[in-house]
Amino acid sequence: MAGINRVYAAQLAGLPVFGPDGESIGKVRDVVAGLRLDQQPPRILGMVVELATRRRVFVPMLRVTSIEPNAVTLATGSVNMRHFHQRPNEVLVCGQLLDAHATLTGADTRVTVVDAAMEPTRTRDWVLAKLAVRERSTRLALGRRRTAMRVLPWNEVAGLGLTDLTGQPQGAGQLLMLFDTMRAVDVAATLRDLPMKRRHEVADAMDDERLADVIEELPEDDQKELLSYLAEERAADILEAMNPDDAADLLAELAPAEQNRLLELMEPEESAPVKRLLAYSADTAGGLMTPEPVVLTPDATIAEALAHIRNADLPAALASMVFVCRPPTETPTGRFVGVVHFQRLLREPPAELVASAVDTDLTALRPEATLSEVSRYFAAYNLACGPVVDAEDHLLGAVTVDDVLDHLLPDDWRETGLHDVTDGADGAVLEEADRG
Image 1 (cartoon, rainbow, N blue to C red):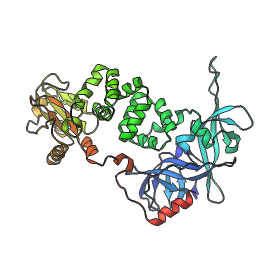
Image 2 (spheres, rainbow, N blue to C red):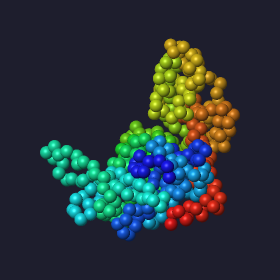
Image 3 (cartoon, helix red, strand yellow):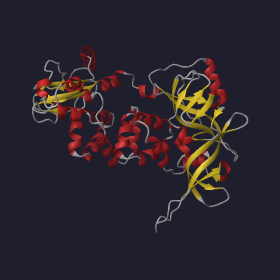
Image 4 (spheres, rainbow, N blue to C red):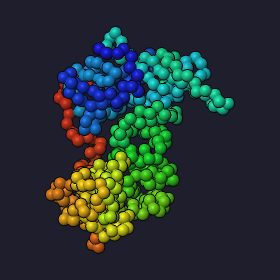
């Protein structure tokens, strides 16, 4: 195999994966190792690769022809499309081994695993040959410096068997550092591949805003499981940090007593829009909408409108349209005047008022409009976002096309990816043979 002869797992995670002709396959998300009963280094079985469809598949190491600092190349552009499932004797190097607590062999020195290095053997196998560890110390006072990191052979570190990894509490600092470079949807997919214990440890270590973003990207069952694991006070904080429509969708799946308890623990100004959304059926415009679109009064300037849609935290669909209403501008607003499309904003002088660019002809959705009606509305008007108003012309919120798609796709689309296809029989046989 061409390329470098020692690869650290944390540096490998996130690298693009290409086929022999340069075609893009996906990204490396983790490395799978087979733990042994003796002290010999574990054999690297393969990599978890995330395809463009978000599906995570297993790629055997024998299919890897090159590992370079900026990419991984496979011997074939064809991969087995079966979703990756961890086996009992396997460990996810990034997901489970990093942050693990261990001791040095023959000593009472406690260490934490910071990274793990894989190296090729003469038989073309790769093994988890070395571990980067840092000594754990309870003496943090008196200005004690952080202990230095050491790189040791695998057999000089004890306490990393499957029982150890599944039984002991584990930090999440190194894993969270990897997550810093990943989108919330990718972090959510990684969490789903982790054992339950490890998933909970990562959730405990995440800040509320980041965890809220990740929970929004999880399948419904995983959302409920993680929310039930959290203490009630923190669960309420997470719901406050979520988008109101996502929080309402999640709360709607809970038992009434649990739903009411969490709503009571939320701050009133945070729970109010969520309660309004819960009053609508989930498959109507009212249930699909977000109550926090960009709303301006007619006397706002084009420059102000552009400043609002430039907000990096604003989803792209919501940034496609500014809603013009009479005061108050919090939903439900004063009388709805119309919308200004972002392309129109780009063509107008910055000092002009948004009132001069308002589209008053766009039909608005009613909150009771069905999912089918909302879908036809978006197809007819070629929109990414649309207004929802009540009978008195108050703006209640906005429906975005991604929320519509979320409800049109099968319930398990986050778990299966966009395609449920498999490779030929040869791929399945090769996977089984190289992962035994």
